[in-house]
Image 1 (cartoon, rainbow, N blue to C red):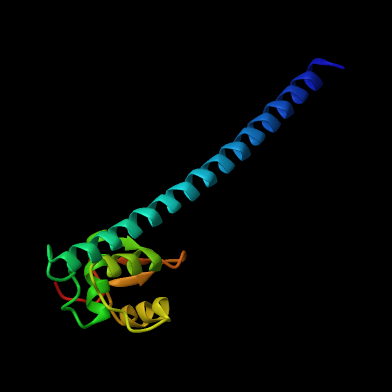
Image 2: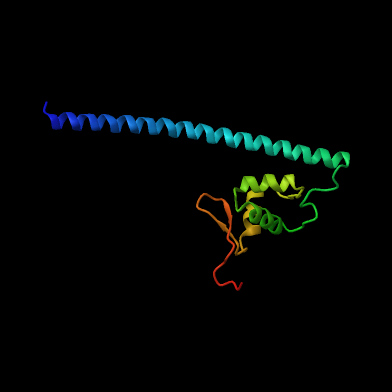
Length: 139
């Protein structure tokens, strides 16, 4: 084997090791993201439970969105505050805020409630994103 073959072989081994490490890190990251999602769900469940408890014992009168009749308006407020939200996050925040969704097709209801709002755009991932300046809108 000559020197050029040794260099090529070493570089190929380095590339393989680096790719293996990258795949290992990707799997670790996927596991961490899954744990974050699970913890976020758990936190939201605790928030909803706390909200209901506080309402029951009279420490707070009503949820933040209990007087808002328009689902679109409630979603607009949340998306504007957070910048970008998944449908699941929106639903959880609406529950926490005391909004009473009267349908079982909640994600569909959210979609149609924000569909015509020029400030809310749907991302490729299916999230809802707030757009401050809309083309054609006067400031």
